[in-house]
Image 1 (cartoon, one colour):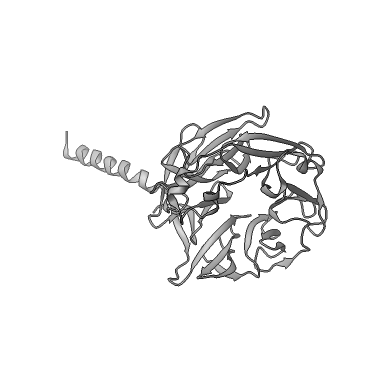
Image 2 (cartoon, helix red, strand yellow):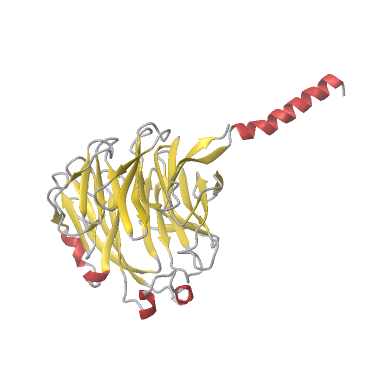
Length: 372
């Protein structure tokens, strides 16, 4: 082989080695709360557009708790911390300006992408999460075995009668998640928690041996289903191990997440929901990873995020943030995540396939980006 051909093959070899790196993707840190005297605990993350996003949570210093929002209007290039008057719980945005925030004491509304909030009249029961189909019509998943509907943007609420028909004591029952696949098909999920053993009354960190000995027992899972855009709801319940914590819908059906207690053989289970048949099938389950959120893009790509387990008592042990992606919900590819991303929970939000973010419960926000 001539020296010229040899040099060409070497050049092609170097190019082949570099090209994958040029197209590699990585979750890069965009925001990091750094204060040795306090910690930021993020609860929810929303990106109603590619430029506007908001994460909510609290700053904890000793016994002091202060509600905060971390807001961006340029796709995460810059973030501003906004003080909140109450401790936030969850968010819902209809577009990049109009949104609602559930707090520990009620419900707030913004028309400025989270830069300013207006308190609404307190709902009849404490909500965990809200969902709006438009600026007037929405629903709330609440404690005490109650779900609510509003037709004026959240100022007045009325109970959904079917919600209270499921079995189980109201003081140990709640609805906690709302998801719509389209304008007609919607789902509200909830649970009934059976009476706890005496040892179960203590925090996990205070008695880790007791946490490991607590057997995962079946409890009632609730479901409210509508096929007419929330005009009518049908209630159902079933015995289930673990708790349904997420449901997301996309063009290829839905993704659900069940999280289990410390003593169960696996920490979590991701399943695919067939909307037409109502059946579900497990698509991800690994004892090494505690998945804490799922996401489906408009193109049908699935993302799951969680924590790599680092100890037996997984509910109190932080671990490395792990993210997996699948185009068929059968084969999952692990994505590179900044080494500093160590947390107990991770949340996903995105505006489209090219704009995806993750927030951790310890004050970090990352974006999926091409590596240079």
